[in-house]
Amino acid sequence: MTTKRVLVVDDDRDMCNVVAEGLVDRGYEAIPVSSSTEALAKLAEPFDAVVTDLRMPGVDGLELVAASRKIAPERPVIVMTAFSAVDTAVESIRRGAYHYLTKPFKLDELDLFLGRALDETRLRTRAASLERAMRDRFSLQSIVGASESMQRLFDLASRVAAANAPVLILGETGTGKGLLARAIHTESPRVHGSFVTVNCAALPETLLESELFGHKKGAFTGATQSRDGLLVQASGGTLLLDEIGEMALPLQAKLLDVIERGVVRPLGSDTERPADARIIAATHRDLRERVASGAFRQDLLYRLEVIVVEIPALRHRREDLPLLIGRFLAQAQGRHPSSPLKRFSTAALEKLMAHEWPGNVRELENVIQRVVVLARGEEADVGDLPNSVGETPASALSFRGPIVTMREMQRRYAAYAYEKLGATRAQAAEALDVDVKTLAKLLSTDSHPAGERDDPTKT
Image 1 (cartoon, rainbow, N blue to C red):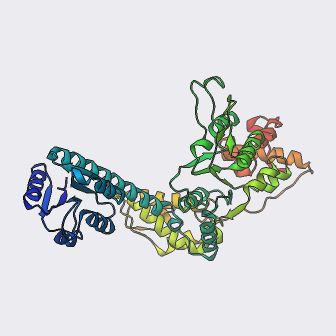
Image 2 (image 1 turned 45 degrees about the vertical axis):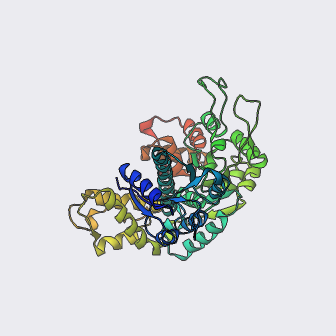
Image 3 (image 1 turned 90 degrees about the horizontal axis):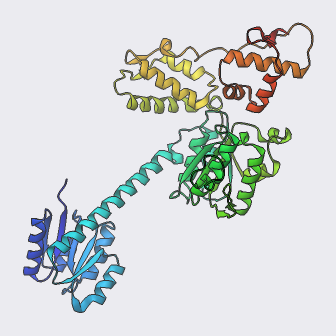
């Protein structure tokens, strides 16, 4: 551990030397100065703390406190004073001194307060460093995008951040809606509050209700203790409701009430609690279509779309691809330092540039990471890219046979897609751009055995 440097100032040379020698014995590098004018000049040097007498000719202790605070605001100053000058010592605390000691005092006492002061300074410095790192990582400047559409997005998001109104972020899956929401929070006055996120599509309705609104002990089977909901936990900060389009209608009504009144009532409770969380909602769905179909409340949509921010798909801002490829390559190399890969060949870059990127930025990041992990040499060529990159779009569907109703066509295609994807219902529903309940209804009307389902392209 680095030895801490302490400037000791007292116009009584003997007192100054005794204090300095005592601190040296306790592991400090103490520099004694018996001239307050000389001490004033030394404050610009890299001292970790200052111990100064209060009453001195020329420059007094209060002036040294003020000068030290101006040069190094985080540097602690401890004031030594006679009992008769306690009122002035208290004034030094008001002006920024860490503590004062009345003479005579024990050097162990000075060591104790000096250690505490340095520990607190270290913690504050570390916290400030972490906050700066968070801002650098999650700010709008951390999002890659030099295209005109992204510059417009950044301008809108920076203006939105300063407000306290709800924000609705739209965009295809994989465009970075969560990253933008975090950047808005980081750029906002609520940055010191919590950023809490919940995926509305990932939790069953009853569990999502408990997560959002909280519950009292005994409110339901398994509720062995009371718990604050995310709306309360995010008070003073931001709550991201990801995939808001999948939220059940009863929960939409409760959320609307929270947004309108700023209070939340936990499950099983008769008491309302303040909920001062800024709401940011995100979805890849068309909420107006969901309103038309009765799956989303129009009044909640009006509340959420006070400010709408839409992230363009990657295929609509191809000029950003070189920047993104460079960013993801550097990040993947950092995560996998044993990889020999340093660059992509011209042919590989051309293929990456030509790809449609249906999975957007997320797909691009995953492709780059895969190539870095599996690389055998310094340069990745076309053959090192996944087969999915550069695939030609599927040709238009062809139909033959008798005409069937649209309902029957939907049923057959849902069954075909479910089997072809070999995925969960949630994944199949996302691919078909319907909610899970709608897919379940379509599949429940299917009476064919799994191996005999029709190909909807051959009706």
